[in-house]
Length: 108
Image (cartoon, rainbow, N blue to C red; front, side, top):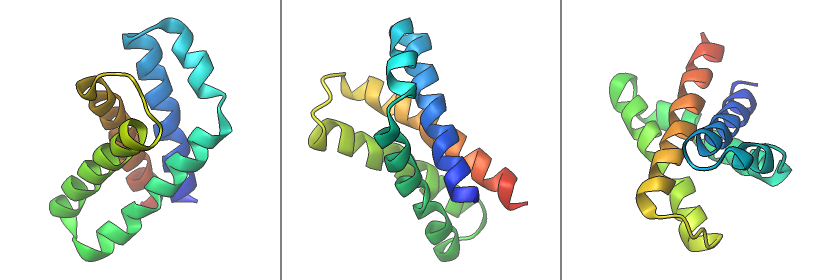
């Protein structure tokens, strides 16, 4: 349950950040795409694996890096996003941070 909630919350936060910092219409356009949630949940599923490998702060830092870099690479190289790298990384950092916080809160 924690992985699903984390992935969904991170995806919604990513759409909100895009709408807030890029164009307001992006939130509505991005928030309603079901495939984005599936991808977000798949990436969030990496968090428990990372926490099994590394405990504490090291695990959190690695999880945040993976949750930022992996979706960014997918967006730019796999899905052909035309947004600049710094913007893609920043928006996916929002996804990663939100997903990680929600995961940790649900796991308590």
